[in-house]
Length: 192
Image (cartoon, rainbow, N blue to C red; front, side):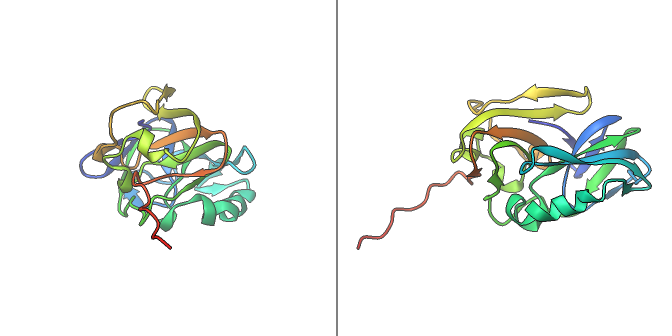
């Protein structure tokens, strides 16, 4: 479920064209505000994009920050990581993750319809069926930024999330609101 490539040194390769980039994760590196010319954040609550063309990193759509803050507390996992945004890069460059993509718990809320998610450290070693066990998933896709095309995923995929998947993005369509799972069941309740 790859949308961005992460090397062993936490470098994220941004390709020319559209890239899904984790939101709220500290990064540095050779990419600058002059390397991208557009950014869009998807609002699952409104079923639409906010953002647009950029000039020196400033967006022409002032509602982007307002929409982000409206659903940030329920949509993003602790530490502001959890969702992804579209960035259009004019050329290839590398970002380096300088902060963690490892929220304290995996309880990100998904809304009916499409949701953008970032693969976190808590998903490492889990199968897609474990991560989405509380959700009725209709579709799952990853973005292949190098080839600028979607790649279809599956809950039946027996492959577990690997360290190299952390920081990549996926879009998931669910039929109703649900919460991601860390793959563990709740213990039995105590007797009366």
